[in-house]
Length: 239
Image (cartoon, rainbow, N blue to C red; front, side):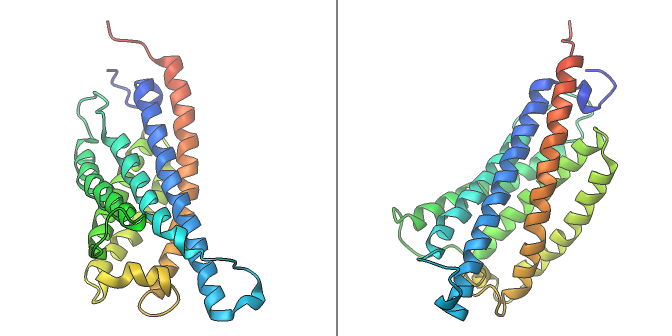
């Protein structure tokens, strides 16, 4: 490998895998946006009645499978980020890959279990909500840490700063959630009564985070697409 660690001097296949991972993470957040829209439409219908004409049918039904599918896509994107070392020394992404695996594998299993429960092949009690939140938090924060390192190698300093500003509230929110007295039921409350206690502060946080993250992931995909094109032009195999 060259001493130049910019992405345009990296293995094009590895950069394309990072771009695919970014697209998968974006799809996971788009799924979150859709679920949030359905939840709020159902809440408006229940609170203000049919005279608004904004809700027809049981829209909460799809939320039960959209959210676990989004969690599975999030885990899949993290796995794609971590699946293959680039081959550089020192490997600055090695610690981040450990956290990606630590969060994504439990998240994949938990989301798959929830999806099976939602579609009825598995019946039984629901798992505590804090398990999903813990695995998702580790996965999301590790993924943003990985993307921050990629942005450094573009370089895209404003994007790096935006990632830092996004992750600080995420760390605080994850800590507050894990110590909340009603943490086991917060996920249920977010789906059923998003604007009532104890869910409404988390509803506000999601309304800020998910659209912001989706826009940033779309921009990240564009950055990585450009870097992959440059890497294709510059790549020379080692003899």
